[in-house]
Image 1 (cartoon, rainbow, N blue to C red):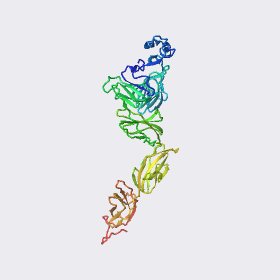
Image 2: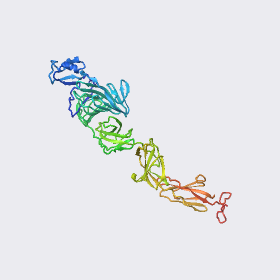
Image 3: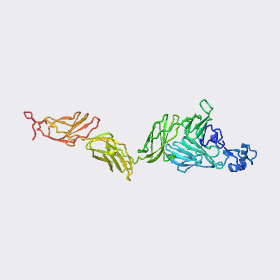
Image 4: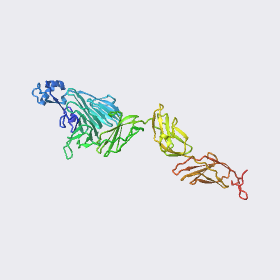
Length: 559
């Protein structure tokens, strides 16, 4: 294999994949470095040298290899073996057709920005970040999808015009790739993907390859076609097969000693039928039914059905995944699961639409499940970017928006109007200046209760004032009395668990103010009742500041 020294001079496990529908033109034991040409009438070795060889004068080597007696007369139908290294070929660069996220091309030690139609020539490495995805179309028409956190190097890409085939060789140094290989014509399979542990020779199939440098392992997953896995890195031992055949729906693991494991059935795709078609939050949450034996769930969203332009990916050990960073619009979704050893199965496919913007406001007041006493309820919310108006809906505690008691479009981020006492649910949506409406935010509950009852007139004696007021079970109370309506002068406060208060009668008469407020059993502190004015007569004061009394004990009023 002189044309592929990096492959032939390393002891790696070899994997040969053949499209089941076409049949293999070579076996696992065939030498892919040899092109087999069937002689046609009039063929001579000299003529074949002129049309097929890089160095036409090397035709005598073909005579020696094939043991041809007369180079000018070749029996029609004779198979002539030609080393691929001798064939005439020209470079046929691969080209980038999609880029998303962080990605770069390292060529001759320099970083080259990646964009659509960037050529990928031998020696170049494509590196993707944790959010990067690159799709490359190879010269033979095959598609290579380089996933996130991957380093892939192109070793060669050539077109052999006369035989009519292409030769592509690349390496996955770390990370994951997905390949859809075009059905090649002519000669042996000449699409090779190498990892530090394995070489995959492919002819017309869909497959995935992954390499994990930290563990020194790699693996392959076959979605269509057939795979013959040949491991030559170690002697055959009990339980370790030297040649392993994989069918579609099977995968194989290659360990750090470059030993190929037995075929493993790929896990089934998850069920996506329960997923919503419309998502209204910037973070798209996917809640899947669990798959038995799954160790990992992987979801990807792309703008195209071929997933050449992946824009978001999420993995999780649980069947709940969250996709971040997507703009509003339609998307294609694919989800698959991995079994215990890490092999991932076929994709389940779906579509969804994201309409999450303009985002709804955040509710500021009242707090969730808050209670408020009064004749109206003050509502307040934030002002998200892009919003010029807001749609406010308030409905009863049953949450039936069709019968909303309030459905208004407002320009301010506050609202205060009267409502009958009761339990309510409210929600908000943002509207752009052009009328584009975003989704409603999460609804919140509040309870509007009647305002505190006014204090009834007290029972007045010469020594005390006795107050009482309506109450609800479990309430505690705070009673205040002051000289001014602002309750700053001569303020006295009494806390009680009973709906009543007895205070000493002020010796100085005049105008006094009283109020009370209740704390409910659940901790809700209500507002103060409306301040009530109370006018008391004054008494005559002695030198000690006490009221003067008559001989029969009656208080003497001041004039």
